Image (cartoon, rainbow, N blue to C red; front, side, top):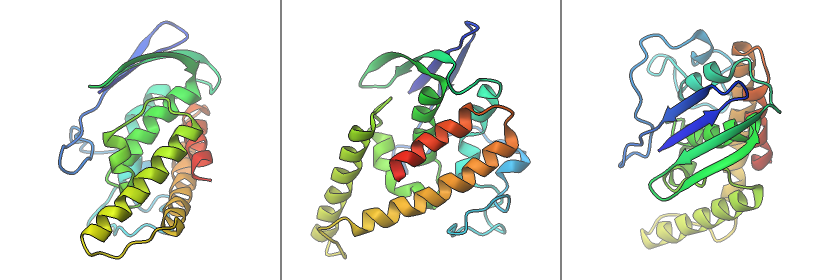
Length: 204
């Protein structure tokens, strides 16, 4: 999968992504020294189940490092063109910087390995680029109810309501808020922060 951004100055930024087929997590080159703002204890989410002794860096933060670096200096409403290649489709979309970054950021966080975003791994596997709020709501709800069906088939606890889905999104709101604090510390402009805020609007 590839996201290609054509910027206002006609430069291009390209992000090629690979997902582990079993874990549905990003396969990325080892970064021996991620930036300090990705350290687990820096603005660590209060609902984070990870321990600094075993996981020194926040998985969600590490997943967006290249994205934040690449677009620092770009304003939220700068006009760009996003070209997206997936195995199923090819999309070319003129849009704002925050919209284009938000689409990729949602995919990166879902497949980052963050325990609180693990629920969204199937949505990363069947990624719908540049999705609208109604599309996201439909996909998330149907995925949750399908999961409950399979839990029932496997004789696990399940529900036919959406209370559990509400809890998942409340946890993601906390992740989004604290990740935004990290990105603010790393950025001079607002495009990446506002891209994350757009994702948080979906959570709300």
